[in-house]
Image 1 (cartoon, rainbow, N blue to C red):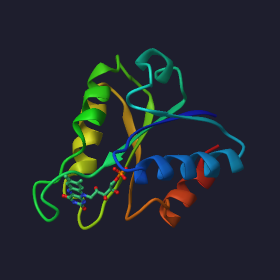
Image 2: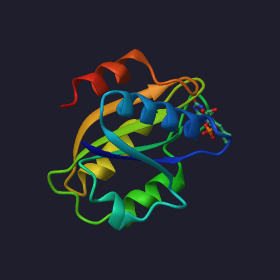
Image 3: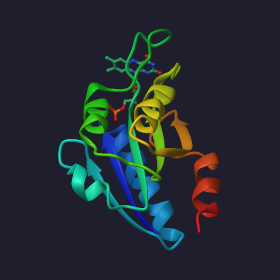
Image 4: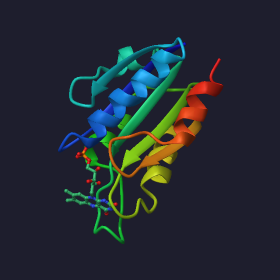
Length: 137
Ligand SMILES: Cc1cc2nc3c(=O)[nH]c(=O)nc-3n(C[C@H](O)[C@H](O)[C@H](O)COP(=O)(O)O)c2cc1C
């Protein structure tokens, strides 16, 4: 499978998580590219079989959590994603609130099917993600 991971990171945690996800996908025999929202081109991204979009959680730590503007702006720039499988992920410290749901909703609005939602407290993807990666054919 051809997978692309797009991330928005301020201090490097989400970038590290994205790289770790790539390694897991590659260990399962998939092709995977990782790009920041600043560098990624919407047209290239749309060609992937699976698109993963991730960012850090921004908010007031216990309330009003949301995805980063950079991640949401990137999603807005994507064309129609009808029938595309997408994954959303985020890194956080205390609580994610509706951050993942907000990203998922924006991608569903483009016609994508959200097949996975993952939150990591730090740069390491969790077992739930590992199981997901192992289940991909
Ligand atoms: C301005 C600001 C607001 C944040 N708000 C939240 C929050 O509401 N909930 C939370 O769990 N973490 C919050 N965090 C923590 C970051 O989401 C977390 O440290 C993340 O892993 C940073 O990712 P990065 O290193 O890729 O930038 C906030 C961080 C900053 C700088």
